[in-house]
Length: 304
Image 1 (cartoon, rainbow, N blue to C red):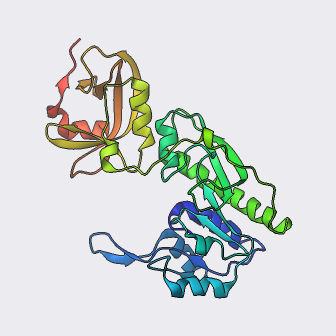
Image 2: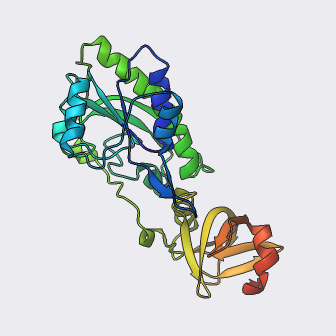
Image 3: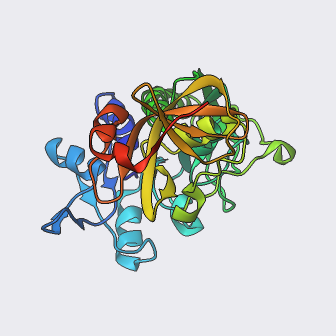
């Protein structure tokens, strides 16, 4: 069960293994683009090409869908980036249901673990597989694998690393469950060490420049490329996707934009931050050089 691109490598690795996939469950097709034509999820598109059995329930409470799952009589349900499963579904398989989560549980329980790990300046994250329980992201851990987060990573690059790492961990977990007849060794999560990773809304994405350069830098890369950190300037919303630390002390007060030597800077609490990629409201995303070609008149030239 899965929806976005993050789930596709896990599906691919299982499809190419000796394990039999009875069905792929994903969300219904949704209108996309200017023409609002119906389009399938990334998981559905892959499953269609592979000729797999696809289920797209409008509701997980649909009795027909639940009965169809029961008729399939799966040994195991594997969940990667999908909805929260009700108990009457995750208890159907004889070996239970497992989930791949994009953090080293119990850290970053919730809908946006990748974003929050980067926003908080973590230098390590990872993936974990666990058995589903009624309380979200609290089940017993089967396997974990860590990766490093570099100072240049953003949420997008960490996502891609975890996507591939997670696929291997899913495969290893399914193998382990099969080889132990559904009883692999597990570890109970320490709830005292749990940290939240709640869903991120638009209002959460506004940049507060009245912080250290490190916090602003991590906040921007933690929301890049999606959903995108933003600020407002002269009545326009500007999304900022990438920055570079200037190591140049800011004495002008936070949140002020300046141009210096053909580069765009914004002041934080302690240093200027160079803006390297951004998007003006209603315009395309571009690097700062392209942006300044058209919008430099909006900003002051820096004066020491």
